[in-house]
Image (cartoon, rainbow, N blue to C red):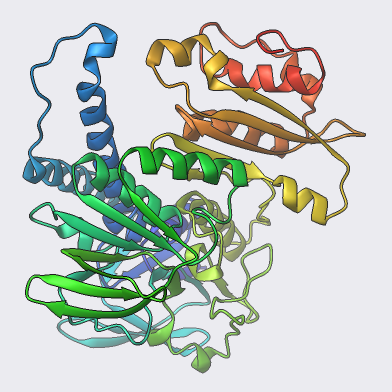
Length: 460
């Protein structure tokens, strides 16, 4: 009996991880990708943006060296070298993915895939068209930036998260349309590098899906950095004028900007897949519908990653790719989504998981809170990073931790202690009575737990 053939469409976080796992389970794996392996995360998202954010953070540290007793004459930077470093990291990691796929004997085809039926795929490459069959198919094509339909996309001064990572020179001014995660991260990068930033958000606050206290802190910090924030505001018109864009807002104001970045959301990449040929169902937002096994409405066809809908996170895609591959190869597996962390790499960082206060109240859960400020933490004082807090949300009766929000230094690392607690049903007592080394930032989590139990040590 031959190996089970698995065709995977898309080599992003969900697709290449699914390919590796399917190969580990003995499958004959064909992976089809029309661009580069690694998808948005590696090539146009997580990795390149965090490289730029790290450069911006180090620049800020050098600028503030005197606070640590270090004398630096003048902090300066080379934008071209910052971008070169970003590209070098991306290329190195992309090479690592190719190495893994080769060693797991995954057949990688560069081409565009579409469905002929639920078991047959057409692949168009630069040289030819071919048809292949597989009893199991995993769709992992991801998402792309969503732009307003009236926008003139031929205007080279109007960018998405894809184009802004290819800039050769630093813009003097940048309008960012959309104050969500992507918009706020790029605002952090370019404001530190000296670009004059205007950040526009149509809702009443930045990061509208986060805890309101977190949004208020980010807005305050951004304004202190000189970022102009316009909330409850939409753009009305945009027109190129030489090497600038003239923008009119719905409040009547007009500005001239060097570049405009749209970070107004993303949409699923399903247009060229011809899903109708396989009778595959999508939800109202266009994402492919799946169950907890990542199974679509058609037997033998699975989907994983951003193509299945929010939250659009690489680590969620990794997990879904594994679940899809295991079920495709006959290993029962289910996706557990109750403790998926969300990380925002602004300065300070933000890490959240589980329920917010508002979500818990909407569900009628009787909750209690524990909070602790980084200003009361010794390591934060040592690092001169005292802005922010840890917030824990737990069920009053059982004491089980339901959610947590952190804004402050290393929040994207610290959040995983709360992730683990939610995943395995730990209580606020468990967290309060766990050793936390001193002096560390992690003590803030223990202190927040002790505060919730009315047993504070370093707070009143």
